[in-house]
Length: 219
Image 1 (cartoon, one colour):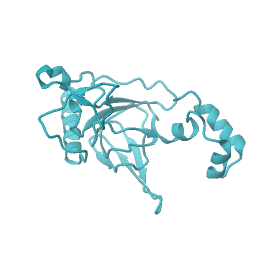
Image 2 (tube, one colour; image 1 turned 60 degrees about the horizontal axis):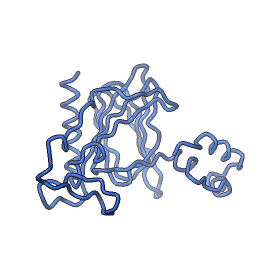
Image 3 (cartoon, one colour; image 1 turned 45 degrees about the horizontal axis):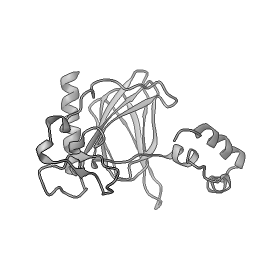
């Protein structure tokens, strides 16, 4: 399991490198330094003389995430926040754990294409095209299958099996961002007007008020 996991993780990460679209670095590396006083599109570079191996290292991706939550899934991120050495390199990685019938809810990554590999279990996955036709494209994935979610499009994964499932995904950004649709729409802070949402979803305001109550305090 460990050898196979590492091999697939490497493949997913490598494939994401090919599709990276962020600006190419102009030096060997730019290890991130979190400096709140300096605002840049990324992070300020650490002095190369102070760079160490740990700046490019993360451990623990072999450990399952806690899926004891309402949706039954957990995403372990490995982006520039976890590995400062990813700064300017245009790639990141996630591990996704799913309880039986667990869901990674509909969401988007505004800055990244995602390539997902199933390590264990059976997933029903899909994405929706843009407003030209809002077409739903779906597939059932088994262990070893790979699927691509294009940048910015709403997508999801659902464990349709009776056992736990695991997937790993490479993303073409050091910081892909995640917008979970239900949380963003019904759990915004402050809340979006229920008049606006009732008209947008063509439902009674009481329905909107109920949904907002379910997602309040999530942000």
